[in-house]
Image (spheres, rainbow, N blue to C red):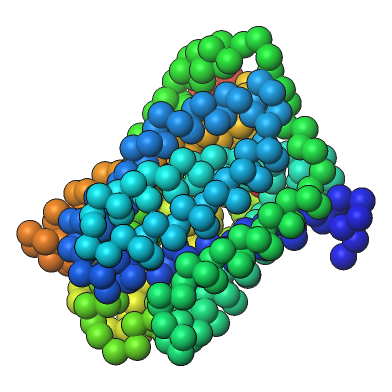
Length: 398
């Protein structure tokens, strides 16, 4: 793989980035539970990031679109995130310190996801590659690392998670120096006009709340799955590693073939199917599943996450005005991640403590089904508009 000319530099970066996520995020809820935190406290900690992100992510997006600061912001975030994460390690019984640490991590994490997505799409288009072909490497690295690290944590102890995270983030920092200077498209004069351009698109306005409806179940799963697994006992870290590996492996075919599926069926029909699959997935989790059923539910992750993200990002890229691609991905990330996690973590924690995990997942299933119905309506409306116009612009490949 030639990375000297930059063609595959994004592949390396994405592979390492998702390795850093695999050693930390899947196990954080389990670590919180081991410290004696309740589901409501874990939900509150998980919601602090999305709350801050609602305000700070648009700022990151505007700065990148205006000044081209993508790589500089990523470097700063990569250095600061593991240092701040040690606040959890030394928080003890001081919940306020958990909250301060969560806010600090949110400040760094909030910039990384939308910038990564915008840079990946831009790099793929420039080099004649596909978004899915790059992003699938993240799924591969996550699957491999999550499985291995679960076994390692069982041997060395979950408390070493923070040092492992710092080591992988050092590798991520090194991979950033391989990246070309991104050329997403600067816009120095019309940041406010870009937001107006988004808000003037009726379908985009309808698209965002439907994204939330389909995302909220995935957000609840990401926050509370490790807590649920911890309640079942046994080899918790090993189970968490295997479940996340199964989920990551299920992403591979959908990231690889998402572009073809989009060309064949279009954005909104796919998103409707994703909503239906999500409703089924959360219904399975609500039935007091065996570990085998948990694995089966995780295999639906390829549809509910990989296909959903690839389709959503491609649609946002096409719908975004020239020079506002990072802002467009930021708006998508705010709804898909921030708002969904904010609601899922708080409402989910309350529902778990009040009615149990089953009721929480049943609620998520109903909300996802509503999103599927909404996207089906949007698909029908879009098809009718194209038929009336007698033409239509084919969707871009992901």
